[in-house]
Image (cartoon, rainbow, N blue to C red; front, side, top):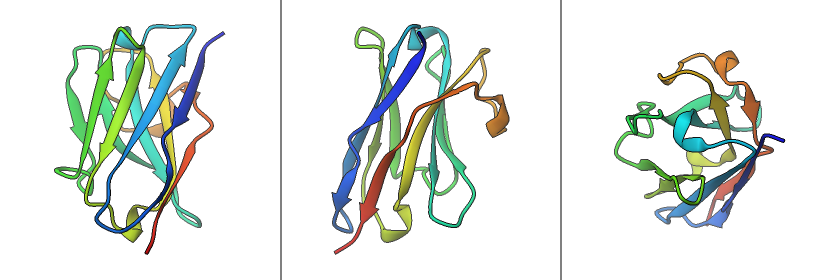
Length: 123
């Protein structure tokens, strides 16, 4: 059974860091596209970052230089390292799987989603 499980969220002070994990079961992350998304209360879900099966990555403008996506093929896990966190980064963070070789921009192209992990940036 295909499953994605996020972890690593929590409460952090402004300027702090968190590393989110997206652990997969039932399939290999190495051969698929994995995206990280976030959704703040009252806002639409937005894409944060993506890594394709070639290891190429991309980031939303707000995440560029602040977040880093990486993949551990042996552990079948994708990570999102988040640094210099700000209150506006507070959201529920989700990882999702898309088939194909490129990172799609449209959320509807992502077929499977995890349950999300909440991140709160506050002093």
